[in-house]
Image (cartoon, rainbow, N blue to C red):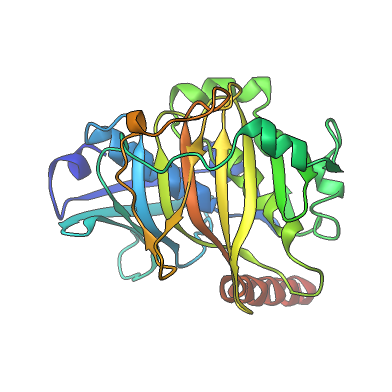
Length: 319
């Protein structure tokens, strides 16, 4: 990522390979490896760190196309960085010659030393979220992925999702990486399996009959420091339309540290707050780590994914 750190317009190429990269090896749909969308957030964190930042401040994250592994069990990726007034634009493309496919885009927003304040204490959230949806030690696959076991195949790192409790219109999600994956933390700021735990739990707040929603984008990410092995997520819906549902996802560390957040102005538009962390008084059980906001699940992306799955099923039946 050093070229991206140094120059506007710079490009960097890499190949993600199943035999080497667990994020591709442990994440598959219908038997075909698929790069996790949250891996792009980690790529942004890597670029941010290469540019001298300790954490990550990014906005306008969009997942535009699924990144499937090729016949050789890998994906050729190209990154591009362009400095603009709205922030450094990062694009993730397919790097194969002759292929014009944009997988994702986002904007970096500088040093995350400033960010939104906490709106509630972890103790208060726990007191409201008392209904156990997923008990500690219960396998989430039989609960949150019921009926999808033959479609989604997740490796051992995705066993990070440990417990989910529900309140009136909010969730408290406990996620802990398995001990065998703790070594990943030496190289990752935002572990994809920890973030995906929130994505797996969030649909529990969607009323039955709404259809299937999959991650479509993130409005704003504010990460002060690397995620620890265990995080607690506070998930709630902030906006809902027929095709899209927007969540606010706040992550806390074991000390009650904040990880991500969203703020709106009076007109309901997403805004980037610049309040100094030091000037925002926090309850004693809140220690900031990061915050993520305007985290969207969309049916449009879901429809594209279902079309591929239907075509793949038909192809397999014809073999």
